[in-house]
Image (cartoon, rainbow, N blue to C red; front, side, top):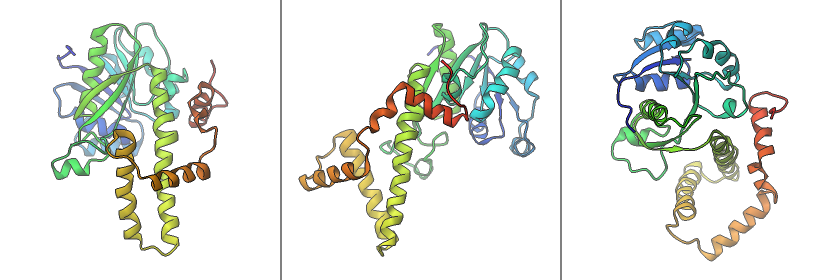
Length: 285
């Protein structure tokens, strides 16, 4: 990465959940940043944080990178309004691949599209301070990786995007480069359709165990510990499961999983779930 000069950055949706997170990190940098927010509550959050608000058209006019930190459902209309106002050679950066993969973002030859998403701190990341242990989401103290995709072969543009990615998600370890489609296969398929669903299933399983009369602290303690062991054994190969455990795992797979569950990795299924997430009848191809 060679792009080390301070950049001009606009954050659209600066008062939202992700907008506040990325802005909290950008204020720690030497970059020149404009903050834009339309909702009254969001505007109050921006000003309460001591930041000056700028109207969106003025914010994007001279920005090297425009971060669209707005909900997926608003990206189509927001990009339609603002991409036309961006200067040639600038980058429009979204924080989730859904709208970009679905083709909802307004395109312009003089503006490069890029997408990024945080990996969030790994359960195996090395932590030392109370702040690092408390930072489960990332962007505050615990180290995390990030994923990025940029529709340009220009290394200088890629460097610029990486500079912003490292700033908004800091502290960042590695930035992994993929295509927009690959990023969509990671998020939502791998981590929302599967991993987050499994996390929700674990919570439901905990609740069912407590209903049987097992003390909640005991159930929670053994579940959290065994969840880490399960991840370490399967994803890191730390220790083999016992023969008895393997039998129980097979029973769980037979009882809970559908035989065709891997269909979620097909392109048509990816289109299907993204259409549902974006409230569309279908993804047009």
